Image (tube, rainbow over all chains, first blue to last red; front, side, top):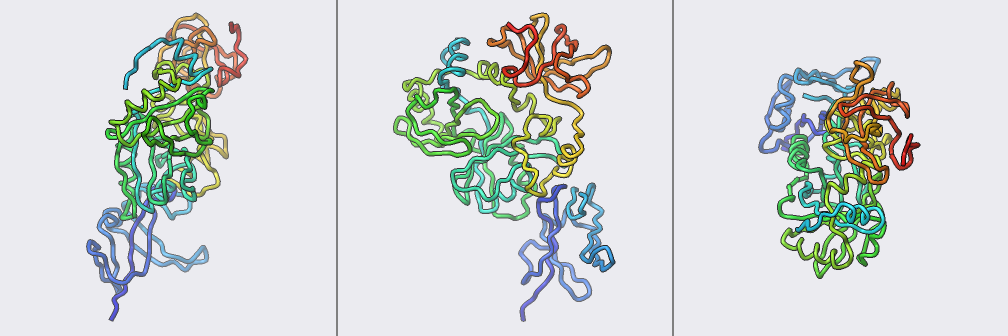
Length: 87
Length: 329
């Protein structure tokens, strides 16, 4: 049976230099850190993990917009739209 | 390559009315390879670098989170997977480190090629007299000089009418230099080039263009695309532009006393420091010392007299050639 998981990563971009990446992928890459949570596997690439350690990932369905919300203790600055951060 | 001369007047005349050549091999060059390289640069700089065609040349500014200039780079797209990045003197390692830092496994690689390649600038209104294939502004072409294939880059934007000859193999630079001299190119040097640059009010790396300035105050507005969307520092730069928040401006200065002006010296209005000189030369066309300086906006009205360490100076608009110069000869 195929193993799918949620890739949680960062990439360079946005007003503050780093953006979050979420993607459903087929299995982890070699250097991914694998985190199991509520039966779901999260794959975090090694270089991204440095910027994501301690991050809380939530899903908001409030009136002001639905979507994933990252609370990242490593973020020293976020841009106006909240999608980009620097660490 | 030889810098045999240097007779200032000969070089100046060639740059302003003929065709001059200048060894720029010391400037930084980086080979950017991989299908994602220009997309990554696009996310970290002020101008649009995606959607370019092969042979396109675009100047863009890498900026920090707070919208300051990290480096001005010229992107020369050879193909979908390879470009040359031209940087300022000694800036290539900084550029590579910066881009590598934000490369999270994308298909791109940045390799410094400064030491193994060479670069010659052709400048002056009669560059076509050299009889070589020259590109339109914003493009590059391949050409043959003395049997050696080179790339010739024409930058689109505010600069002296110049072409950059990129030579992959440094060992072939001497032949190409000799070929350009034989075709009528007059060897000149950076000091002479700098006099024309300042007369035309053009910003230079490590003078006006530094990490203490943002692209708008450094005269790099033509290289800022306000419609391209997010890049690092974009919010800050957009705010500066929208709300006219620039605190200081780049202006020209004329020495009233005729004493040469000093780079990096301060300018005062009364007891208050209101600016700093970034470039200073003795202008041949104006016959007196001139400078470029960052000055606080309230003191940039043309005709304002400020005090420098070398005596009083008069503020004028840039470029000097277009300014109404009080008492000019």
